[in-house]
Amino acid sequence: MATKQHSNMYLPLAMKQWQGVLSLLCLVLASTLCGCAVKPDCSTKSRWISLFNGKNLEGWKVKIAGHELHDNYANTFRVEGGIIKVSYDRYDKFDGKFGHLFYKDPFSHYRLRLEYRFVGDQTPGGPGWAFRNSGIMIHCQSPESMRKDQSFPVCIEVQLLGGNGTDERSTGNLCTPGTHVVMNDELVTQHCIGSRSKTYHGDQWVTAEVEVYGNSIIRHIINSDLVLEYEQPQLDENDPDAKKLIENGNKMLHEGYISLQAESHPVEFRKVQILPLSDTDPKK
Image 1 (cartoon, rainbow, N blue to C red):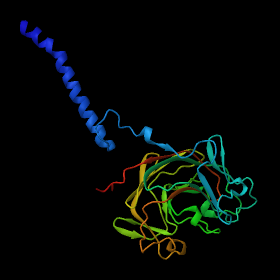
Image 2: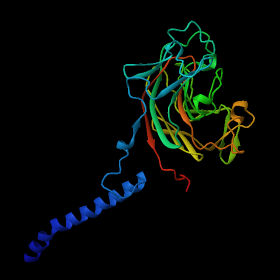
Image 3: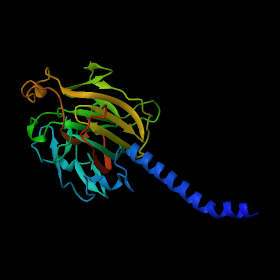
Image 4: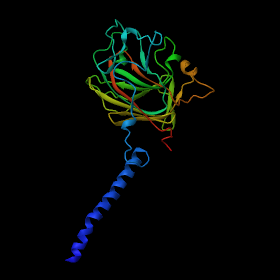
């Protein structure tokens, strides 16, 4: 009987010790998964930076084809109700006025996150392929370096597409205006490559994320699903606009501006945030 009482007396202490060991193991595992040193809280929540203040376009620059930089023709880009809206209610006809809204600073290693949705009808005169079509442009040339009549910046485009209510149509695709990428160790010169995403019909909000590691890996993520991955974004020396950006024969893209696209179909963006990442090559 005495032996039983003696063992029970130390049971709470033993349990506490095991709880401490388990807590430490959980902390080490969590820190390993999120890539930070062992510390009480390695959450990245506080590190996300809002690029859009929800009130106006402060910090952003408008460039619309055929117009000078900062000329927001017909108030194409506007903020209403905490949302960036691409609107064409003041257009009679689209007339090739492809637009891009650039954030003021360039980035290299980061994770970009936003929500988007397509609404309403396409503007008269918009090309058929631009139906429910927009994009997140990364590694962009600066808006100042674009020609007045240039339709698209030299960049890597994360193409955003909406469904027509019937057919399958992936989003988070890749398009390459003036650029190329490498996939499976081979240079890809095809202009657009489809992702393995689901189709999103109607006016629902979709979360798009882009994980960018300079000239290394780039990942497209739609509603938390990895849908496309490639690496070594680079300038296309056969493209006239891209050729002017090549310096000392270096075609590789390591950084650039971010822009949101206007391609003739009304689209809305919200919760535009960026998470700076380490400049370490993720493959290493």
